[in-house]
Image (cartoon, rainbow, N blue to C red; front, top):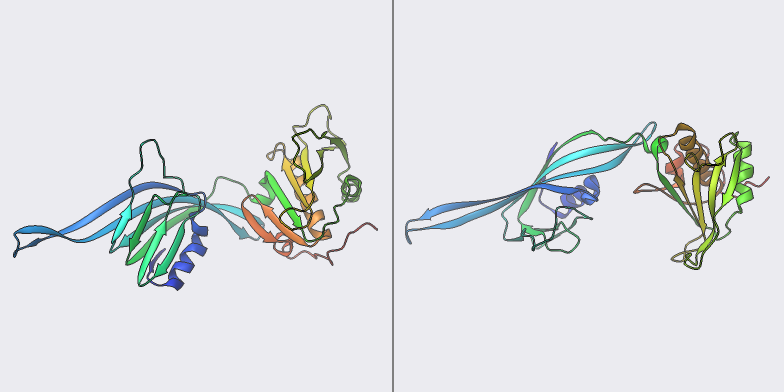
Length: 280
């Protein structure tokens, strides 16, 4: 895949397609300066600068069976460079990209690649070439390590609500609460481990950690699920089933790994119901 980036619309496409290279790394960086001989002065003059950055990044693509990890290696070539800074200070490492920032203004493109704004390029236009391959992770729905739900409502369900719904889903669990300490976040309401009733409760290695908290940033309640061992099939199933129960029962926003989606997206074509508490 190759595409030229010349205008604000192209730049918007680039940031959307790459998710701003979030969490990526600059693996290679080249500066090519073209020089021409000026007969009038008898000296070589700079006729243009091109900078090429090779960026490796991963993202999740929605497929028929859930979210799949994809690894991409992109070559971003920036032509007609008029100003740049690519030199690291001693001891610094700007190869890791937090989120790439970019803008198109006055016929120029501006890119900032590192969190501190030290690595930047101003150029006339750019081009991206990239190849993709399947990522190393399994589909996120079956290999998730963490899932968070931010509800629109402030009415947080109790632990018993979760246990009752898991019973109905054929996954009865025991609950092992975690006591709060003086350093506990003030928004935290309750936390503990869900352990499958058929498992050995002396170990949490096959359980799911559940953390429930009250409103943050003017939002509703939140619930975070973390798999102790996401590669253990029963634990992975427990996490996904509970995530679906919560998403079907409340209106809100889901976050699987780094992917943010509305509950309808998470549930796909399933019947999402009316978003009310299912406490029948």
